[in-house]
Length: 232
Length: 353
Image 1 (tube, rainbow over the protein chains, first blue to last red):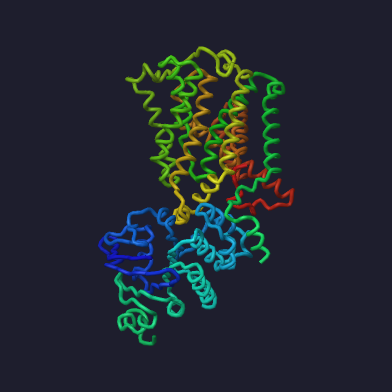
Image 2: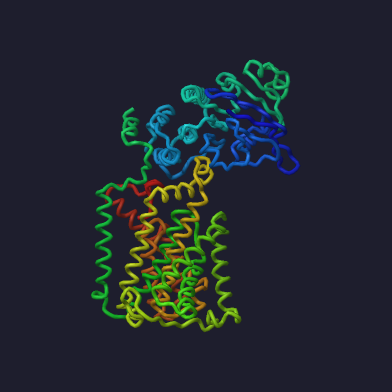
C-alpha cells in the first residue's frame, strides 16, 4: 500500500527527517505516528503527500514511485490528507464544499460519508461558522471523499476533549475498516493512538525510534526514554 | 437522519452551486432581455448627444470595471494595470488598421484574438503571484507598454507621443466610421458589448468553474489536496478578464478612432479600478453601476474646476460609507426588505449576480 524508503528532509542545516522508512502493507489499517514536538511527524506527512520535497528517499504507493508527483495528482491516485490546523473552505457551506470535491473525484456515496462522520446537522451551515469539532470532521470528510486508498491525518483530534477524541478515533477506526482504507495518523493523544491504532511508528529528532504493534512500541526502551517516560 | 435522506435524494455528487433552477434562469433571462431593450432605447430618453456620450463612456469604462470585478471576485486578484489590456488592445487595433491595412472587421477580430492569446501567456507567468505582487505586476506591464509606445525608434508604428489617428474602410456590423464616431451610432455597440460582458461574467460565476475558482480563492492548498488543478482555472479567469478589458480597448479604438499613450497610463486603469470599488466586486452589475456614477461624477466635478479634489473626496466617502460598494449596499437592503439575511449567503452561492 504505502512504502517510504530512507526519507530525509532538511531545513537548511537542520535535518527534520533523517532516513525514515516505514511501510503500511494493506488497507483497513490505522497506523499511528507518535513522537514529541519537533520529532518530524508533520514533516513526514508533508513529504509523503508532496507538500514538501524530500532531500532524499522515495515514496511508493502500490509499488508506484510517486515522489515527484504533484499534490493534486497524488490525491487523484487515492492519497488524501487532513491538516493539523483545520483546512476547510471558509465561506462555503459544508455541503457545498463536500459536493464540489465529490463531483470532481467521482464520489458516489457522499451521503454515507456525511452519515459516518455525523455531519448531517451541519450540512447546510457555513463551514467556518460551525463548532470547531464539527470543522475537524469536515476536514476529515474532505479527505475521505473520492474513496482514497490511503489517508494521512495530521493531528485529527487537536483541540478536542478526551471524550471527543475517543469518539473521533472510533469513527476513524470504523472508516478504515469499512472502507478498507489505510490511514496514517499523527496524534499527540498517545492513549488514543495505543488504543485504536493497529501499528505504530515512534519518531524522535527526525529518526525512527521504534515500529510495530502498540504493545511492542509501548515497551520499547527508546520510546519510553524519549517520549512516554517511565510511568508509561 | 432526515437531513441525510434529503442529501441522498439530492444526488450529492452534483455541485450545488448550480442551484439556478429553470424558474430562476427564466427570471434572469427575462431581466436581462428587458435590460438590453431598455438600454437600446436609451437614445430616445437621453436629452442630448452630450449626455449620450457620457453613457457611452460609462459603458466602455463599465466593461473594464466588470473585468476587474470579475477577476477580483472569482480569484481574489486585483488588476492595477487594466490599462495594459485596454490600451494595448486599442494599439493592436490601430496598428492592424494603419500598418497592416486590414478592414475594420479583420482588425477587430485580430485585436481580440491577439490580446486574448497574449493575456493567456502573461497570465501563465503571473497568476502564481500573491495578490499584491500580482497587482503590481499588472501595473508594471501597463507602464512598460506605455514606455514602449513612446520609444522613438517605434514612432512610425506607434505614433510616439502623438498617438495614432486612424480611419477605417468598410463597416463594423453595418456601422460606418462616421456613424460609430457619434454617440447615437455607437451606443448600441457599447451597450450590447457591456451586456455581453456582464452575461459572460455571470455565466462563468455560476458555472462549476466559477465555484472552483472561488474555492481556490478560499483555500488553494485544500483544493490541491482535493485533486484540483489550481493553476489552470486562475489562468483561465485572468484570460477571460483580460479579454473583457481588451474588448473595452477595441471599443475605444472604434469610437475615438485614436490610440494615445494616455490609454496605457495608470490613471486609465485607475478609473476602472475606482469604478469597481464604488460599485462593489461581488456582482457583475456593481462595477457597471460604479462606472456610470464615476463618469457622472467626473462630469459634474469637472464643471467646478476642482476635478481631482472632488473626485478624491467623493471616492473616499463612497468607499467609507459603502464598504461593499453601492451594489452591495443595495443588495443588503433588498435582502433585509425581503427578510433574507445577506450575510447568510455562502461563497458557493455567491456567484456574481
